[in-house]
Every structure is written in C-alpha cells, then in structure tokens.
Image (cartoon, rainbow, N blue to C red):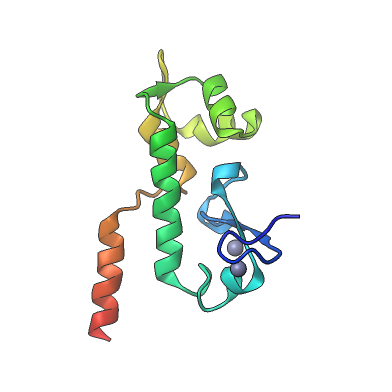
Length: 131
Ligand SMILES: [Zn+2]
Ligand SMILES: [Zn+2]
C-alpha cells in the first residue's frame, strides 16, 4: 500500500500530467495522494496552483535526470523505467538523430507536449490578485 506524499494517509495514484493531457504511465509521472490531497480543495484537480507546481516539479526532475543532449531509446527506457514500445510510439513524431532522441523533445513529449515555466505560476498569482 502506498501513502500520501503530503500527509501519509492511504493514497491513490495521481498522474501529474493527466492522461487526458497526454500524460503517460511511468514513475516520474506518478504522485501518490490521499483522496483529500488528490481531489480535495488542496489537490491538483481542484487547485490550479498546486497542479502547476507538481508539473513544474516533474519537469525539473526530468531535466535533471536527463543531463545529456541526446538519448537512445534503450537509455531512456532504463532511466525513466518506461515501457519501450509505448515510448517508441510516443517519440515517433520527433526526429531520431544519429546520437538518439533530443532531450528537449523527450521532456516536451512526456510533459504532454507542453513546456511549463515559472512564469505560468506568476500569471496565476496575477490572475488571483485581479479577482
Ligand atoms: Zn494526504
Ligand atoms: Zn489525479
């Protein structure tokens, strides 16, 4: 049984990049959250700020983990603990260089074809301030 990363209660598996946003099954995209921290007011499904923070955190982890410019499919499978066939399909839309796939393409795709920036959080705060 897994416990909530925030409070330690029994947890559900949350996809940081939702499957509806193009998120995929691999450990870095999972966050274990109890029902309150998952679907409650302080959970990512109800709280846009928390949602963004989790996504920025995940993107940061990916950037750190992939510290080279290019990766082969096998290297990615090993590092990300991701299903090879699925990853191959995901990366089909990106160029395969002789050195491998470009790190930035891989991160972009795993984040649901989106680049998250701290600026998005600031925008959120501005939005709240104006309400
Ligand atoms: Zn919790
Ligand atoms: Zn969820």
